[in-house]
Image (tube, rainbow, N blue to C red):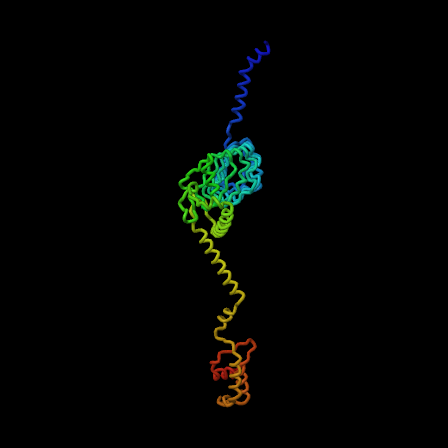
Length: 374
């Protein structure tokens, strides 16, 4: 009796303590670090944080970021909207077993490794919208046993096999270039027979083939041959499709700077940058040619000289040797003076530096200069 009476007395107090503990466990600790221009996830955040918003930064989710995330094991919501994430590596969120909402929209994710979502057994909402995802292996969703919402809107996905998500209630697929050939028949059947709701069904349209454009992927009419020859047609369609997609992806990656599909249209800064680079290269080339090939410089400094061609030299020599009487035409000159004049005239033909003086120099003036007293 005493024991039961004591238990009755202390029962209210025990219930009160339990309720207080449950309330403390449900306390939300929010940390908002949006638009801080962070390149790495900070490591000095409160370790008891439950809601962490790191949107609109420069985070790449590399190995250092993964290690930092693993210290915040109480996280229930993580927002990494509009960062610089390109690849989701294996075990990127391995220690976040309490995480329920993960939003990585508006990044540049093109690759999701097979074990990227390992450890997220409690995740309920996954947002991968407005990235550059080309294809998805449905096996990557296997660890997400409690996933209810999957958002893949605004990617480059054209084919998607049925994911093994037994608790999924809502899926968002619009804004992708869906290939509504026989290869997508399996997805169509799953959307029509399961309890999953396709959000914005009316705008989740086929992109090709052309005859099926503007059909919803959930209501597209398939031919009977798609049902009878389904496996072989899938292989053929996938090969053709992924070949065309790979070519288009290569072209788009060369032009690749499509950021933030909702806003920030592509500017003209890239064109200006290309112009500057081309101008610098051309200027450098001209300077290099000017330094390494100074022929034009010598030509400008000696504009009154010209190099004597071989046949011209022979002509001059023949002229002087063949007509010696030209020397005798100079009046009042003795043999010694004629020799000096001949040597000066003959020097026009051969010169050490390879140039000849102006041939129009008056020989009479040249003779007078030789008779000037020293």
